[in-house]
Image (spheres, one colour):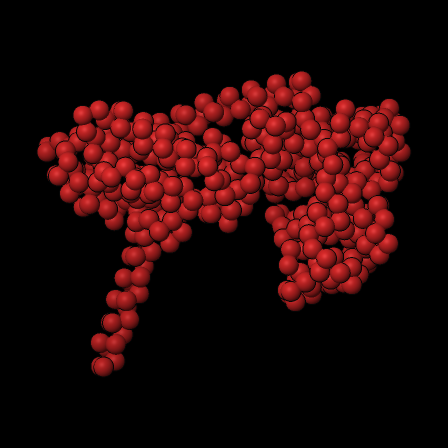
Length: 425
């Protein structure tokens, strides 16, 4: 083949692949809206006015921030399959698409029929039922994931057809936004009521000395009560941050942990989670917390504040002042989720923690992953130089336990060692 022709051939092939990437979503196996405009036109020519359903997932973005993009992509693929299954089972002609590549909006076009609203409601109800039957993210209810909007498309020859399609989709999408905002307001009210009524569930998970398999301490965990919509802790704290209730939530969790640890007779160190965002609040005062610990009958030295960095720290000076205040009151400090999120070497340098907690993503499968083993070996040496103790989170098998222990990690936590226990009042 002539060199110029060969170059043109490969250039055209690359352009075709680029265009395909814009018109087809590999995750959901759905085409994007621009790719099906001709199909929608043919459906309208054959069937007349169309109904439009928009299924929007994770409108505020809190599910993806809580569970990660991989879990959310699985949820999106599951929703696409559910929508396609319902449409196929209905026996009616249809066109399904994604709003764009990696969009979180699934769009379905169906013949409106004699009762457009009734048909759309019926299809939506069927999709909701299929979604609720098998949620791919454990602990996440379909009502917290999916929001539906509906509109109708009656083609007008005076208006460009493509614009009519996009306008119909926009109307249905706007309905999902309004419904999502309503759900957000309702959920915020539920969370506020839950905090005022102190309905949180407190659990304690042992942290174990790996060499002797004895209990070193306990991490206090919190979640919402069953049926509250906040049973999943990740979703609870993510929503609280987005609703400006994170300080109130963490204060309630802290108070419960201290009181219940004393009543339950938990021995060893008590690890209490706190976010960098909550620490930035003016109400987070180490002296006030010290008084609370004293009233609970605990020693400051036995309380460890696990700092979680869900969002990047913007006010480093204020943050380090709070950390210094905690240490001045003889509290201990841990950096949580090392190896994930925003945790960084700067955080280690500024805080100089007493404990480092390796994120579950670093420990999962470490027994068969040489790269993870080398990372843990290097970080363990760094921690020893800093005079900090390592805690490996998420140990779920005997092989992971042995590998982590043999790498010199002194402390561990995970379902293989002990599951969290609900503390009953």
